Image (tube, rainbow, N blue to C red; front, side, top):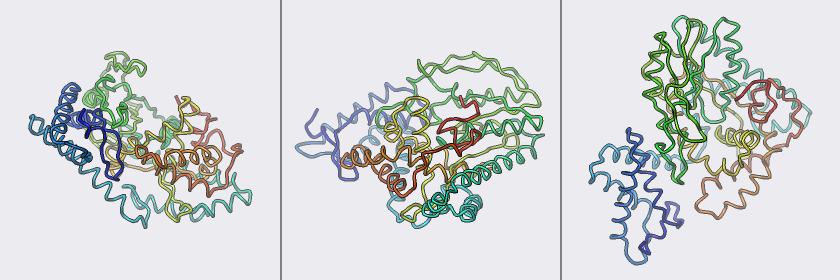
Length: 449
């Protein structure tokens, strides 16, 4: 390899090692976005990009990320991959706009497409219960009111579930599909269990269509910039087959569902029979339930779309609203470490592409939801303080000077400052087994697997 291709200059000015695989993965991701699944072609195109870079890069000049991306666009267009080139260009522009937004001064909370009325309701509740900033939360904890905060918070969440149920029952004659969507660790599983209990009392039941079984074989999945297989994008799912099966199920037919084996990364077709009766609703519990392509073949009148998010309306020590994504990051760290022996460090390092997929494929569709449930609780924060503070303190030290982990450093530094300002709660006995927060910290009465 040419000496000048040993490193790349990032937009921050940092110099990092050149990685051909990132080029191949970016090309394949763009191809997947327009329906392509040919990894060999992506590899060949990546080689063509590297060939041009070798010819144009001389001496000690180190290419920039922008220069490399310009060459990728040129190769895609010149070699007849116009649709892939368009997807690549649009994705590149989307990332540029997102970077511009991040440079703006954050003087107000970012609603992330959540209806303002919902945010106002949550903020109003937070003020009424004196948990609208970390200092007021600390004051209540210092007074011995932690158990009371737990009770108040869980009651607010349960009311949201009750209101969602009322929306479903109001349209029960026309409905055939119930969609429960939300980003990672928003509490979809427990919310689904609680809603199912209530529906059963009303004479309805849910029959789950597990969309995880519709994953393409692993070798056909897009990868992220680090080469990891991306299960977070809807393009990893066979959306056409999902829509076909939904149409047939609603028509009363029996359908043979596929089964996906996560150990082998392979899907087997026509494995499990499924049929839906008049007193049943098809349940889709998925990150991407609101994504248009997931249920495009089903009329809106037959769908009830429920969105779940951690709508925490509380200001941190910097007087800025705590980010929804930071609470969900901590939830996932605790849950995955407990259930899957998954190192929380890995969760932090991979959160950038979890978040990227949310911003592209989940957040833009929030306003299409029929109802929004807030699953955030103020009392989670002091619990996370006790469980994770030492980890974040360590990550801040380790990632501070690592240009390849800048995203992980920025998240770790922000969460560390937040947790440092909180009174820790180590005794979790005040949190009942019926609480939805138990989905993450353990001890739930609900079957969550």
